[in-house]
Image (cartoon, rainbow, N blue to C red; front, side, top):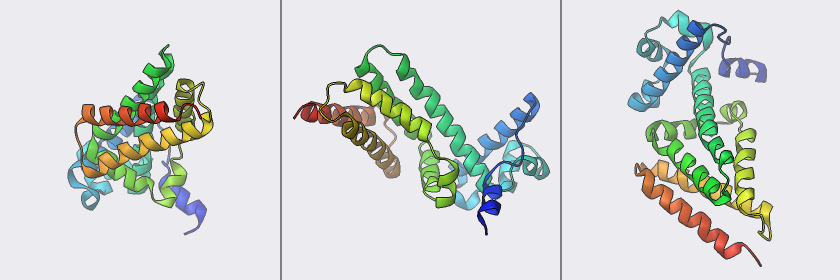
Length: 203
């Protein structure tokens, strides 16, 4: 399969332009999320998604060429939701409060629908999907929030990269273990982040 045909398989066939069409697409994407949560990869197919969404398979195929395109759309939706939540940190005057909020947003994104988040993490690891769901804007925003919290750090770029990796690594690992306690995970990530900062702020 060449690159062009692979991209077509992963991308929506058309973009909804009317509110009714937008509602149909939203219901299809949410149905895909519910099927993944309840049935896993084995039960995830276009027929099951169409049935859960209450639309015909023909209506689904108007927008999505297959389940890979549904997966990409779902990852993009979850990424946008995280972006909107995390962006609240940019409105906070305290840099420490902003960093704490970013940590909370990352934890919520992973553990509010933990099985869905775990399965989407697996899908994001596929090379073809990864290229369609790159998150440079989200990563830049997170890095900006982190850097704002460490203005006097001896190596701010290194620290920002470390903290981004630390938060992502701890949250993803908790998801893989099936953790569900949002408050306890948030407490541990904050302890790791601010412990790191207290030890490395100056050299």
